[in-house]
Length: 140
Image (cartoon, rainbow, N blue to C red; front, side, top):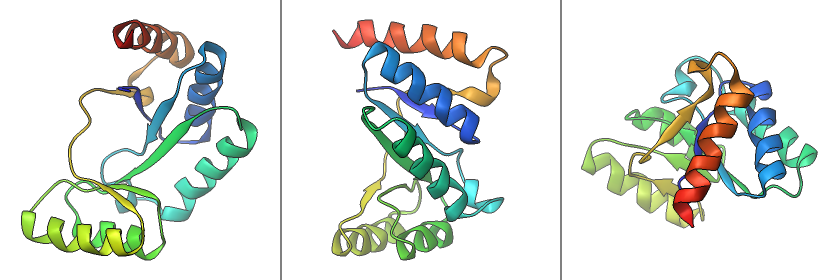
């Protein structure tokens, strides 16, 4: 599955989940890189909770992207975020991986191959629909 969508707020998450439900696909919703520099874990946790409640049939994985900031990743680990992306120094990566494994948290240490950023689109729904259907065809 290579359907990662970068969301910036609840409306983006709802557009993505609505389309995933409409075309029957699973998706990955991720935060912008180093999102914790300007908002909290709770902000995105609430977005994820609302979309899971509103779209219970959609298979979605939610990733909090901490980029290369070990402090942000540690904060996310402390708050038990289920999927955290961390891309940086191997020394910190090994420590974070060890901590994540102890807590049964997935630490994603590779960049996404392809991400559709909803912030960059004028007509979010239409552009995302085109992208998701083209990616779906590649998966077949």
